[in-house]
Amino acid sequence: MNDETHAQTSPLDAAVQPEQAQPEMAADGAGPLRVLAAAAAARADTSFLRVPQPARQFGTDDSLAPAAARLAHECVIPTGMKFKGTADLPCNMRIQGEFEGKVTAAEGFSITVEVAGVLSGESHATNIRIEGKADGVIEANGGLASFGAKATCTGEVRYTRLAIEEGADVEASMKKAKAAA
Amino acid sequence: MMNPPQEQNAVRMRLVPPGKVAGAVNVLPAAATMNGSLEARSDLCIRIDGNYTGKIDMKVGGTVHISVGAVVVTDMLVADFIYVEGTVKDDLHARQAVELAATSIVHGSVRYDKHLDIHPGARLTGQMNGPDAQL
View (cartoon, chains in turn cyan, orange):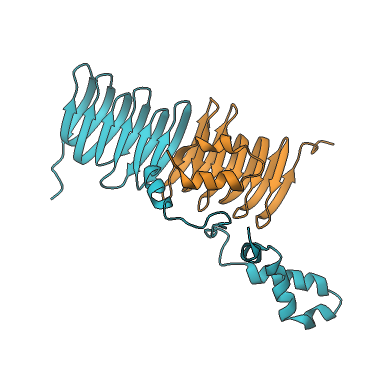
């Protein structure tokens, strides 16, 4: 784009600087190797699992990014996909495919199982909406557990508020929890 | 609808067709954690922004986009296309192409059956197996 961009992103910078900083190391036999090692040490950060800084080369204006991120901030298991395991989410969840295991959404968020969706296992969220199939422990403490007309549900449902549409096939033990104080 | 982050990706990507990740389903948003196994039987494109541990098996087709900030620890990640901007540990296998972006950190083995692209700035430690690995 311009000279500034090139200067920022040149991958060779990191390798060159340590060599200039320690010219005496290159004098003995293992010189080149040591220079390489020094270069590696110089750029080795705390741990492997660090979060990399995004190299924004085209358009550094991120002003629109937060809005887009918020829109996209939803966990979706699409149709045709099956997940087995545990999920810990600071966001809403939408299940169109299959989910087996334990899902916990943070306070204030909802889990929606769409018509084609299947949820089995444990689910915890403030609001839970079932339009497809659900089995296991469904816990919507402090919020609304609702079942659509085509829902099928077995297992155990804990709720503070409850809505069951006509036609829903709900055969579960129901337990009302008190609303959070 | 405008979606600036994906537009930026489209410009920066060199190998994986940008159309492959444009309609990605956000399976795991930032700060979310998942442990287990994901399996898909249809050609889907998924994006991972958060922390994922376990298998990802896209049995038919499939594109996996591991975006900036994502950390994936997997003993098996199989898809047609894999586009990495985040951090991945252990095995990747792309039936078509692997692209490691400038921000990517990959530890482990990478297998690609057709094409490979590593951007300057990518950090890769491990074994590479290309189409001619059996020679």
